[in-house]
Length: 262
Image 1 (spheres, rainbow, N blue to C red):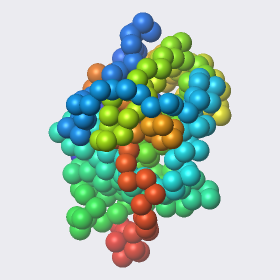
Image 2 (cartoon, rainbow, N blue to C red):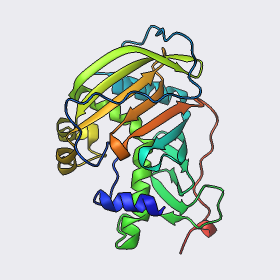
Image 3 (cartoon, helix red, strand yellow):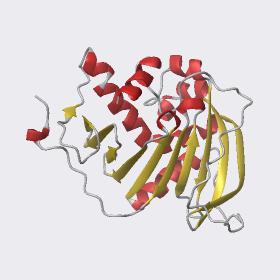
């Protein structure tokens, strides 16, 4: 947790899931998906993709995920590359509930309420409920970590910024497990995306967008438009996320009252 808190402090209190740290070079290519142990040696012949373009890729990807109802995310953060975060996401009528866990901390989000505790879900540490009015230590640490993890869970929505991308390239992708994919590569102008509150309003302010300027992003989608891998950001704030377990039954509940800190 100490390393993550240092990152929070170093980025002005938040490590945004839309990238932070130094501004990316506008001419820099989007990150190439990292090789996976599950990647097959078969020829990377792409299946026929669903018709996706700048204007609709974000909406189509969200629709495909919602249709499945649930999925799992395995998140690798370059800053914390020795630890994988795992999240189970379940769509509800109002949004999505989730349970995210790693060695340093865990977050549960249910019905718009969020809870954090140190360590993995299996630890006996007490949970702290997110308090938007908190000040001091909790505002910087617990609240900051909840916001960070919540944005990681919402990272598929970064594709909503595609209409503001200066690059949009489509090419055959690799196998992810046994599934053929198509690769979409883009470089999103964060200032334009932030100006459209419907796109990145929940993610970043105009000031943060001005500092970052651009977001390199690449996505691997299967022939049904399901997101299989998402890579974005640069340097220590590069993230790689794998998606699987679509449609698996998931029960996500808030911590019991006796499990909460007073």
